[in-house]
Image (cartoon, rainbow, N blue to C red; front, side):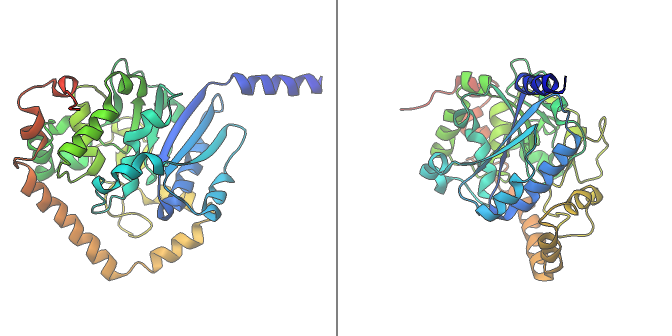
Length: 334
């Protein structure tokens, strides 16, 4: 009897549906990646197998080995070096403000993972409190993405004007790109990756929010808007639905600042992490000078948005030009 139960368990494992989850990181963010994955595992349904793929261009094995300790019967963690994908155009991928180069990697997912027609993309500065399988099972139809509105943009006058006048997207429709349900089958159908590469090589738009600006401009009109309970930024915006994901999307991170909304969720999981002592030491050593630089950069983003919103080099002036279907009509020049 016991032997047959073991066989049944193995059969059930093989038959469990698979949910692919994609992250991107550099070495600096590996501790926060570990904490994010820890929170996912703690709340995920056991009815699925989860395959986590972490996009990078080189990481410390000592650090990745600590993350791999989280693997269990339902969770597999892979680290994928994608230097070959981003290397040829690395000089085009801007590394500005509090955004790292890794933020651009999500735009290459459709070709990196041809075996998947649908994936979740998640940032590393989040804590997942709900069952991530529920987010994955969002029905997208023929939409490119499922995503929540970016309240940081829509509720800020200057950023809202930037969304509309630079990117051509109504502020209430401007998506937050840190948590995405990605319809890769539709990405391939509309050739999104090649169109992105064409746009960045031809125009290299002066966006304030790297890949998020491109995704908003390219995917507008093909996004299933999710309640912000699946991407609750650490600002006092009204919560829509259940609090499933806390997102520390602003420059103030709980591992550097005390006055961060919902910081208690981060520290709950951080205390369980093998990186906890490192994180605490980093916070204690985060100097007033470093905080001042972050504050200056935050002000610079606002001024940057003001400066470019009506520029001749905007999405609106360069490619949209009154055509609401510009992305599907875009012809890539040889």
